[in-house]
Amino acid sequence: MASRLMVPGLALALFGCIALLWIPVPSPTILLKAFYDFCHVPLFGGVAIILLYLARQLGEPRGWSVGSQYGMAFVGAVVLGALTEGIQFFSSTRFAEWSDLLLDALGAVSALGCFMTYDPNLTGRVATWRVAPRKQLVHAGVGLLVVVALSPVLVWTYAYWDRAARFPSLVQFSSAWEMMFVKGRDSAVQIVAPPLGWGKPRVDTVGHVVFYTNHYPGIRLEEPYPDWRGFSRFHFEVYSELPGVQSLVIGIHDAQHTNDYADRFNQVITISPGLNHIHIPLGDIRHAPVGRELDLAAIKNVRLFAINPPEKFSLYVDNFRLE
Image (cartoon, rainbow, N blue to C red; front, side):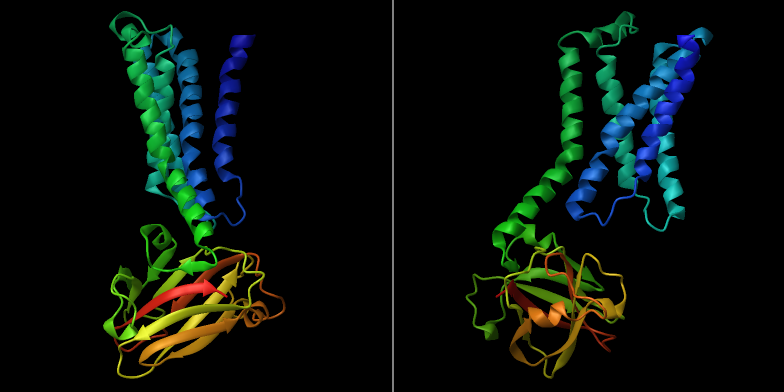
């Protein structure tokens, strides 16, 4: 009776594992997304082990070799991973990623490799992988793979710590860690020495942004430190070497943003030649959305962009901070 229930029980467990991928996640942060991506490793490690047991239940009566069972478990896990990624092409809330499929395969390899070192079904020459030193070698390899998969989580954890340590400075364009939160759209942004006319020491650094000819070229601060309460204004500096004035738009939204133009703070600013100090009262930001207040405890995104520039131009920016 128990053996007859084994196959449907394992199939149900397999379905449950795959179903975990479709649990909705409300507004994940970059760090949380990195953690969820890493979870593909243990999840598909479990899928591979379930498939291995299924292969044994179905294959041993038919004379399938142990190697064939492991091979089918690995291939099955990768196929299931590919199917789950493929289905996401038809979802408006999820996105298929090759990196997720790679993590699925890595999880399957790690779990099957570790399981192999304890598998009493291994006989003959392959049984030597169950004893030292080969057993420890496999464990070390599996551990290395897990650390590689976990490395984005560790990197982003440090980046978030660095972000908190710099607050109330948001971006100073002084390190690669803070630039992890600075993204360009139809633009190029890099850390450079300040232009001579700015008056900053040459050992200092600023951001140089090249705005290309497109609809909304610019930069965004993705997930700045979110809690802006207790401060009075938002400040940043722009230095222009252009011969005339240049209009930009500063946009700020919170975690509840609906993607409507009226549901965020928007302000046109005029950049004159030379150094420009931009000061925006936080009260203006808080009262900007129509029908509600912007949540200053949950700032999600800051954008600085141009609208349909007729030609490419560049500006220098620095010292995004709260005062």
